[in-house]
Length: 163
Image 1 (cartoon, rainbow, N blue to C red):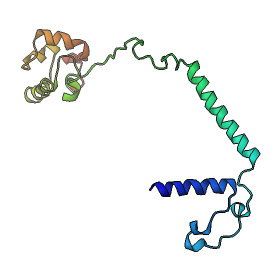
Image 2: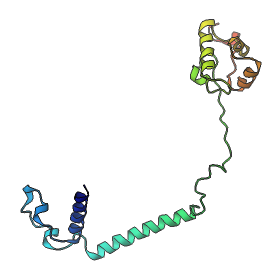
Image 3: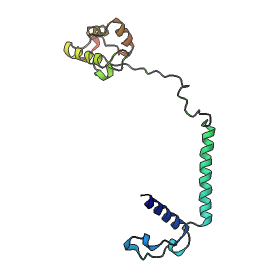
Image 4: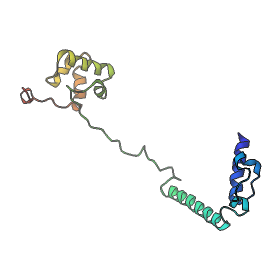
């Protein structure tokens, strides 16, 4: 594999510099190639073109380096994760519509408790008030107070459409 890579690099450099490529590198169908720039001895890119491309490449690399230094890369300050203020996420879920995965996002509620909430809702019916959550094994007064801010208020029974 190393020989193939070396041959490929040699062929590319030879083509760019205008060196005559030996015919044994050609496939059988191209043993007598038509003359092109590489076979006539003239380089594919002239020396001035090569110098211009080299200068533009050096300029681009230098610009990226200066940008990196200007943004604080040399001081290690490009990304300041530890210095950013913590952001809180505020969300509320509907007690009578949420799936167990949504309940498991609540503080102090794991997967098993979340599944018990959904099973209780299916077996015993919808929750009329937030206090009805106490019927679920594992939800006491402390847990209920901890998750209340994340629960959407339930509508009053007289204001529900169809009742």
